[in-house]
Amino acid sequence: MSRQDPYDVLGVPKSASQNEIKAAFRRLASRYHPDVNKEDPEAEEKFKEIGEAYSILSDPEKRARFDQFGTAEETGFDHFGGQGGIADIFEQFFGGGFGGFGGFSTQRPGVINGEDIRAEVELTLVDVLHGMHPEITIRRMSQCDSCNGSRVEGGGQPDRCTACGGTGVISTVRNTILGQMRTQMPCGTCEGTGQIVKNPCKTCKGRGLTPEEAKVRVSIPAGVEHGMTLQVPGQGSEGLGGGRPGDLYVYLEVKEDPRFQRQGQTLFSQLELTFAQAALGDKITFQGLEGELELTIPAGTQPGERFIIRGEGLPPIHGGRRGDIVVGATVKVPKKLNEGQVALIRELAELGGETVPQPPGGILGGLFKKK
Image 1 (cartoon, helix red, strand yellow):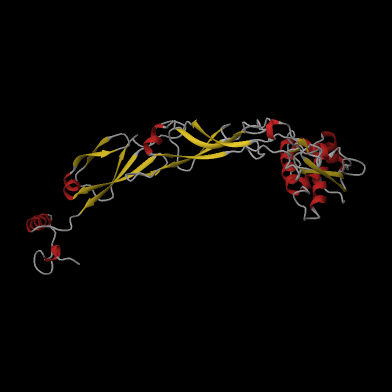
Image 2 (cartoon, rainbow, N blue to C red):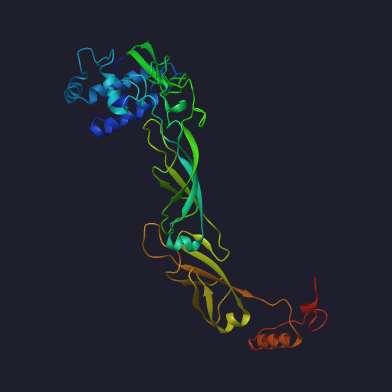
């Protein structure tokens, strides 16, 4: 491998801090790991360059020597072999869970974590205003009473898997220019449990779990929005062999309210006014979330005008001032008028200096003729 500038390999400036160097190494190592790029023959070489560059820049003495002489050692970059060096670096950063360096992170044989479950709760806008604490019914898996979760008939113990020796993983070793690279995968024979059940429990059919119906009370804060998810730790299905239980995820569905359109904490509504109300003004009652609200309509209100009722909307989810209700005015124009009404409207128009043409077919023809 040709010598390369470790700063160029990691893509960092010479003034980079140790945190910046670590972040660059983690990002590039994740991208070029051979197990992630099995079809790319150049990934392994790039992976090695990244590790060697980090070995220099993470060591103050080597970094200083490179900055002064252009090389960290007499032969340039340090080379790694066996299970030390770069293996230790990847163990530090990835905890061995990447496969290949420093082992494979697994649970104890027979330990199975419980599955997460989902439930849905429907709310009204009033529920959103105050928050709620509903008791919901869920279906989850719990340990079988017949076998106590062992999966074996009568509650006995399962046998150790001979394919993986009870470890739950199968190891493969391949030689690379970095030395021996070990990869561990879950055992297909025992499905990663390390155990074989030869006499499965008849009640749970060897699963160790049976379905149950349970009631759980959840706390939904005020101000939630449609589509939000509430996580309730430990209320999912039970685990086996000491595995942790899953979580309950509650999906929130806020019902549509025919009176309002919601945008965050603000509620938008429409109010239909008569011609007289819009022209002369009025005091009317408006139905809010918690009862009737009084709204003053000023004389000369135009269609599309908005009135804001402060603090009668919804609260933010983390607390604070409630939003507003915004009411848009519409003016109802009558479609049919009697002769007296037509005469009054004409008189009103003429008093205002308007010229009102006669409708076709006589004075009332245009008002009573259906299209």
